[in-house]
Image 1 (spheres, rainbow over the protein chains, first blue to last red):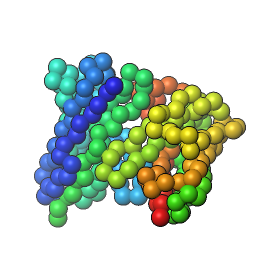
Image 2: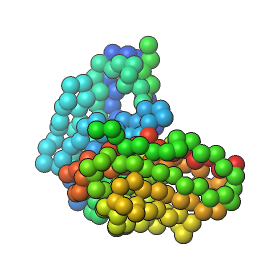
Image 3: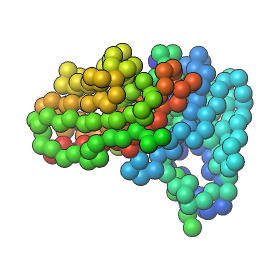
Image 4: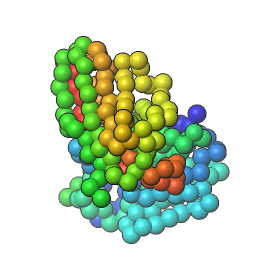
Length: 111
Length: 116
């Protein structure tokens, strides 16, 4: 079945700098990759997604890239702000339509 | 859109007791999902309903777990004879009919279960 690996597990960046989180997936048949943000005491919220027919997608300060050949995808956050502090999960959709989550990256934005 | 609501937010119980959690989905969503999230991990699928029918159960859902959605609206998840390993956050999500690539799942804020 699908397996998603995510790194780093923890990331600290200065406010205003960029943050990058990287993921790999195992099943070449996967074609949809959502990203979630989970704040303390809250459930995951979908923040951006990418489909396999595009290589990059941007939404204001966040962007995702996908390399299907290498089975890599990444989340980029630019001009980080304190409210970006949270746990971020990458995910892939398995052949049986299940969301397979990575283990998460705890992002700290330092003042 | 009032969002997905879960109750209680926290539950502390002794090992061996039974617990029940409730999830109220977004009203027009006919799919409802249960996930379990342990510390330092992403959510893992447990089961899902389409209307009142439970269509799939994960191997993670042991015989001590049962979920219901009797009228196709709210759902309950019951754990019988709780064990230490059941300590986790239990998340509920709902969506319109369709896979996650077409119909995004909206998550509630979870019920955190602690087994003493």
